[in-house]
Image 1 (cartoon, rainbow, N blue to C red):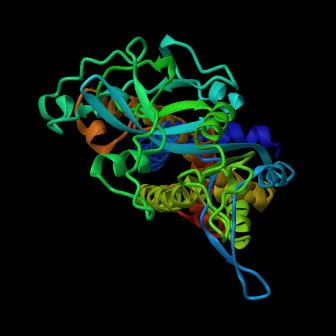
Image 2: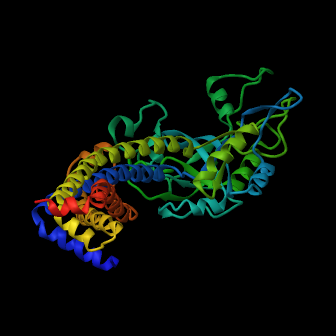
Image 3: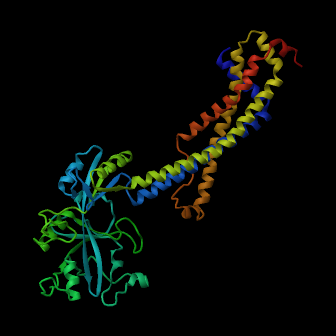
Length: 456
């Protein structure tokens, strides 16, 4: 018997028993819908979590800090410094795309009666342009020789009254009347000398400490955003790293620069060392091996991928549990298919006997019942997937119109059906249907022809 004939016969037999077929298909619909929606919920939570993490940090970046110690083979302790040689070494490492050195330096800023403590972050021109920050006023600092600052839009709220110590923003929710772009803002780089001169302190020689020189640094621009809106770099002061290096060397000359390591005799090195190096890796799966390599070398390296991977493992477990809950409904549907096919065999015993007497191959008889079970799974799978999309839209609309999503920290749709899930769910329904119909098909195949014909 041809496969096409078997298909026509199986569909005809199902159509003859419409009510039973519909009820059995309904069980498959419920099972497939449960699985798809549960998996989609887990997938939505996982993707939303990744999107939230991407807003605050890159998952393919490794941050390396200076100041860690490494015990070498001779038992001596060696301070691992971040310099240009380290940058070149990392650039030559496999899977590393970019290496961005950072140089941070703390200064005191004064604007009229207001004062603020600021941390300057020097970056390369390539990284500054690659931050994709929107600038409300001015532009990015584009000079590698003249020091200019790019202010985050929340920098101004950290200014406080120098005499009273009160902060207009944190006490009254009012930003200080300071125009970072146009006001004359004085910067003190030698903060140690500043506090010593104000406190009346004296160095070991007994000579009173002279107040350090103040510098006016031109503003390059201010990032776009409302006061109080917290985003990446909203409280940072960014500048070109080479311009910052040149400024520090002019100010401190041959003196030790605060925050920079010194030789054993207390004298400064000829070069400036970086405070941090950001390593951009090509793929997330390569982040952890490179991080471990850096840690083995003695550097203090860390990445968001470490704890993100732990969160992802937890979300995968939740997704598997949700899928298993949905699979329970599919198990009930499989039992229903088995019951339907067994009842069909009891009702069609005589028909099976006639087919065998006429010479029909027993494997064709088995294939006929397997196809009927598979059709039940196929129809239930298609309807179940379609109903899953409708149910997902309803869930997403409900979450979007309530505070549930915000409370859960979910951005966008909470129920997301991936493209691969729909065809896989239909295939799963067909397989489950045929597995459930396998035992009844064996019974039909092994049925005695004479006993079947005599059956009333």
